[in-house]
Length: 260
Image 1 (cartoon, one colour):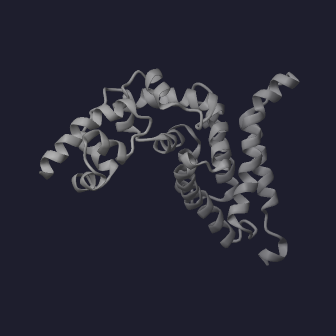
Image 2 (cartoon, rainbow, N blue to C red; image 1 turned 180 degrees about the vertical axis):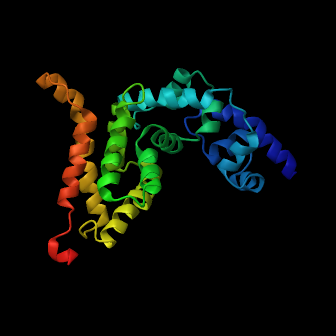
Image 3 (cartoon, helix red, strand yellow; image 1 turned 90 degrees about the horizontal axis):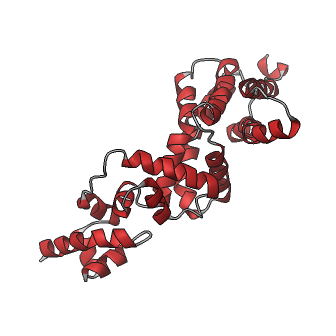
């Protein structure tokens, strides 16, 4: 009986994936004509069902989905994203889309990992943990700029969307926010704290120190195109963020009495 129930759920699941925005366990159970309790006896979770379906995505599907999501989220934000439109623009089936990204939270997390400065900056802070702040922090600032402007089409739209979603803490972004904060605090935050403890930076809340560092850099990165158009000037982006980082370093220099 359990085997027949499992097989029935598997047979009906593909149709549910093809028609539902984000199918729930209740929808899968209803389509198969079984109770939720029977569903959970067959599969421990919704994720386990998706794994059991073993839908093999066509070659390049993941890249096409992320590329299409990059454009759609960058232009309209995560809340306005339609998974139907995303599947159409990426040229994949809904089953393939949901197999790779079961919902908006998983998709947004992957977008941030792939296109934001999060991973490059975290990697730098870890690899350069033994270097002084005068070397590390300007390089982190330049890494942010290069990630946004130096990798093909500018990533400003996605960066704006990410900042809005993170600051609003909408449900679809909560998972991404949590992971991003853990990554940054565990890498750049840990580096800054270590430099404070060694006496190279003045002691203060590491989180406030990160905000003081990141804020001006992100504002410059976001407003650079508008400033250039409005004022008719050409701003050297890497030089600008380097100067902002150096300004941060001056503000974080330990007081003389603290170093004696």
